[in-house]
Image (cartoon, helix red, strand yellow):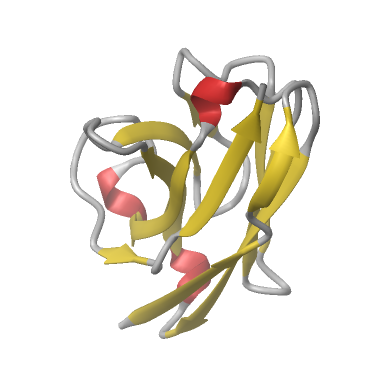
Length: 124
């Protein structure tokens, strides 16, 4: 089992920045690929970004490319999402997720473990 806890959400004006963190605990969390997904009210869950277990590979959703950066520090068992140039359409609950590295870090597929989510609200 892997436990995930997000933090860092909040209210920010359009054009601003936020950094989300996801602290992982449990069995061998560094062997897992990790990702961020988000869900806005009335919309389907959307892939945001993912990172390989080593941190050497990353994937981004089209809507956040060039604005968001995913990273991880395996020594701290923590993953980050640096969000810059935020837009009102980035408003959503952001979820941290993890899956075994054999399942890849692409935008498709299911995630085995989830955090409880953190709210990000971008005002215009």
